Image (spheres, rainbow, N blue to C red):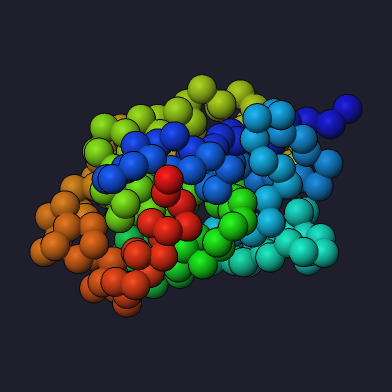
Length: 227
């Protein structure tokens, strides 16, 4: 029996400055498999897939690889390596992400902005941490309200059981042990990310420019995603 893509949702309808995100343009999820299905109201399969996992986590061929599908990989936690103790909290992990892979976050935004007339999926393993920060970046650049960004992040808590079921299916006893705190979706973790952007000169847009993002990319992002 085919499984539904875990932690899958369409960002369509999310309010941003000057409008809303167009349905069917930007999806987020946990790791999808080739035989997964999606609810009928969600465009599936996507034509652009942005995989945020590290190389050690990825397969020789992405599960959604197919003719006409563009698969891109931007590892957002490359600072975590075997033998290196991970940060104790997700708030610290997210700050590590911002410090060490800001250039890849810029790449993610550019890839989303470039996918005109396409359905783009952003995913990692759980679809919570790397995906959560990436989607928060997109929404912040589009001028979404802080409460709406936080609400989208916290929605993952409703999908915890299906995420864990996916991990059991894929990894079983081989699954790496992670701090218990990593299972949750704590508001302080994403709030810390938003604080970092808000406190930067020029806010999220200023932070994006600081790490190589271009003004025209934000213009394309609005054209690609908004209605």
